[in-house]
Image 1 (tube, rainbow over the protein chains, first blue to last red):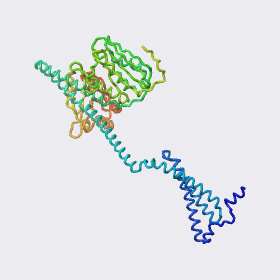
Image 2 (cartoon, rainbow over the protein chains, first blue to last red):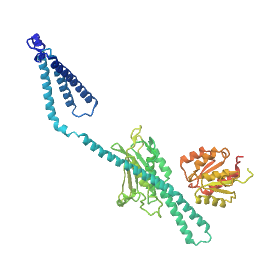
Image 3 (tube, each protein chain N blue to C red):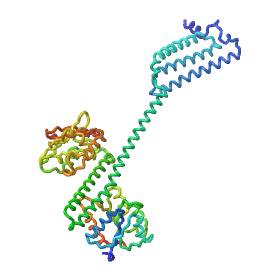
Image 4 (cartoon, rainbow over the protein chains, first blue to last red):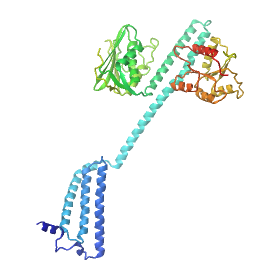
Amino acid sequence: MLDALARWLVDPSGLTPHGFCLSWEPGLIWLHALSDGAIGIAYLTIPLALTILVHRRKDLLFKPMYLLFAAFIVLCGVDHWFELLTLWVPAYGLEGLVKAATACVSVLTTIMLWIHLPRLMLLPSPTQFREVNAALSEREQRALELVRRNNDLEQFAYIVSHDLKAPVRAIGQLAEWIGEDIQGTANPGALENLQLMRQRMVRMEMLITSLLNYARVGHAKAEAEPVHLGDLVEEIVSSIAPPPGFLVRFQTEVATIVTQRPPLDHVLRNLISNAVKHHDRSEGLVLASMRMVDGVAEFCVEDDGPGIDLAFHKQIFMIFQTLQSRDDRETSGVGLSIVQKIVERAGGRVWVESAPPRRGTIFRFTWPEAVIGPEAAGSFPRS
Amino acid sequence: MTGNTVNILLVDDDKVDVMAVKRSFRELRIANPVIEARNGIEALEYLRGQNGREKIPSPCLVLLDLNMPRMGGIEFLEELRRDAALRGTLVFVMTTSAAEDDRTRAYQKNVAGYVLKHRPGQSFLEAISMLEHYWRVIEFPA
């Protein structure tokens, strides 16, 4: 049985090799033999290339299609080698089987190709890719331009505020000297005006310094370090030195966080000192706290002062905006702008909650930069 | 104590700052001669007696601003410390710049002190008064 099959496959005596059909004409024989051999080699190397492509390009779409193509081409190559073989050996049975296999795989490939055709057509062409790329690089250019302009602006603010200081000081100085020189002879009005002039110079210097501080935000990048929040707030409170009637308390869910200390210090210091500074009574309570909201640190500074009208909730964060006349209270109007800039640089946001006539203002800000330190949450005594 | 009068070489391009020094001298009744130079180049010319400028006799104390046109304070110090004849000159920096970088570089060039012109809580008069005590007490390089 097996013997019969083997004979049918490779040696059906009685059949003639294909070369016979070509009358063993050497020109024809060699033309067919060399061509079939070459095609066979080519058809084996093309799938090799395809396989390498599929293997290396992890992002390739329709990978099974490539492998089907590879199988189909391999079989075609084998077909050609059998044609080469049958020039001399009448193994038509085996050749027929290989052909049948090729037929199966090629039909399968065709079916798959037609099925996938609509999706293949949707693949972006290199031209489309180029267009998208061009659009992207244009956007990138615009982003770069924006960054450059931002830097220019910061540089400008820095230079302006730095170079403006000297003449302002000089004018203040001269006003002082004039005052000293005409002390005995001038009328009181002139002296008073000189005094006002000096006061304005001091104010201008303060504004320039604040502008400089605003421009400087983010220039120095500090290393993240473990910050014990209780110690930080205690330090801030002792340096602010609130008047005797004021009490500042602090509660936290987490004792220590890892973050850049200077910017967090600046924001908390500003909010706590604002709460004390803008209080309208001689006694007050400022409650600072930190809690975790969806894994992000949220700080809060709450006071029992007069509150801030809803109409001003946006305005207070604008640079040089103050809610009181500078003659009544010497403030630059930059503090909250700096707070906002620092918080936003840290990836957080800051907002105010207050609704007079109900007393009290709550400033909240998120601080996503904070990494929760090694100490467990809640280890700090809650007061 | 040195027998000769100490000459003050004031190197500053800001006229009002120069006036401030002279005013404080007047108020503190300091009669030492003050020679004014507007930048580092002029100051070197005075110290060397070049370019038609009369050489300042020693002992001499330099009050140096940092931000000046043509040759700033730090460059002046570099030039000064390279010059074998002037290397030992006593220099006080008097500037508006509180920058750490400026301070470090100035002290690296062996200044005797770094004084801020406008320091909160300390008047300019006090600074000048301190300087006067300083030069009255110390011995100058030969």
